[in-house]
Amino acid sequence: MNLDEAVKKHIEWRAKFRLAIVKKEQMDAATISKDNCCEVGKWLHGEGKSRWGSKPELQRALDKHKAFHAEAGKVAQLINAQKYPEADAAIGNGTAFENISKEVSTALILLKKAAGI
Image (cartoon, rainbow, N blue to C red; front, side, top):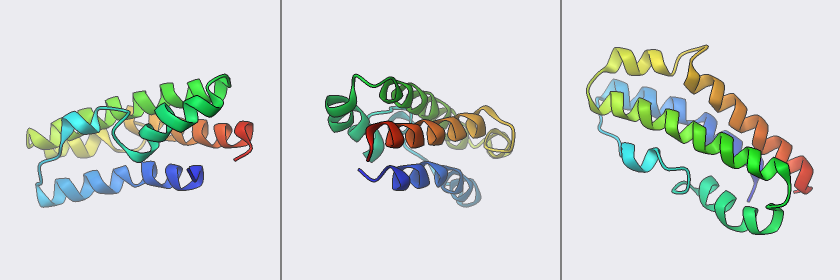
């Protein structure tokens, strides 16, 4: 897995949410809330865990990734409930979503360095 690409994919979630808000689209909040359904999560829980599971950086990445998806799921639920101003505010600067998004990116970068990948 290219962890640089993984970081980019998680940064793109904010844009996906903004687009869903603008288009007033429904989202699959149940799947978004799960940390093992996206490509990164499948890798973290699968190959990543089997190869680097003994590294604390892997566990940190798993924890941050899980927290990210919990926050993302909350945003998706707001969008589905047509609470668009609240959803937009939830992905703004200084929010729990933004903070955990940065933390998951940092955790993936640290895992990349620790694993030498």
